[in-house]
Length: 91
Length: 236
Image (cartoon, rainbow over all chains, first blue to last red; front, top):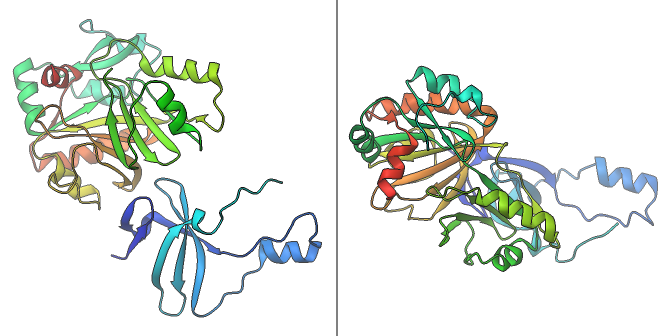
């Protein structure tokens, strides 16, 4: 059984989690071109190596960030999204 | 609570009341809901069973929840005492149980001995106050509520849940939000005086399934469903 450490709930079976893809910086919606916005929404880098990814603990709907090595599938670190996103973004 | 009420004559009853009836449940009226009082056996037998391994359906009993950045502040302003730690339940003097699910979310269970709908009062107060960044999370119609009681309850959970709920590792008031029999669930340890007991809350659409899973797991430990009267006797 593969175990992942949720920052809120502690170690849990990996089946309780869903990966939502890599973390990427959102461009300013007011300034960005359509192509750049489409690239942000739909495209991923698919890097080999350590990446930051969005994960969700499905039992609590708790979203957080994990650092995972995509080559070895080793999860190196997990932390709350508030560690990275420190300000509320209003549209 | 009055004896022998027909569950179909109440607007609020457990979604799997037919299963409970077939198991011999006898229903009573409790706060205008239909609640299983007992299963037609003696009070002493049911209390003894609850001490060993019992399963109680508390689904008709009120509960509520709130979520948002301002939730802890508003809950505290209502006279409730809630600590700093998430995944921890905080009993209140009025019998309610406040479970802190995260820094921004709580679930609140009506007092098991209360004869008033404390959660409804809180919901109404919330509607009046309209506190900033504190949003109602209806829990009454969305979650089913079982209680697993008795000395071997942790062993039963070991069959259907990956989290270590052994009494020495899962202390009183601890909360686990995890998968139980592959259903997302909230488990709260809330002992009935000296008897180990766990609240189990999960999607109400899975009530029949969860009941069947638990009954299957109970067979190994000679567990049995018991009524609300048994746990009430244990906490009196």
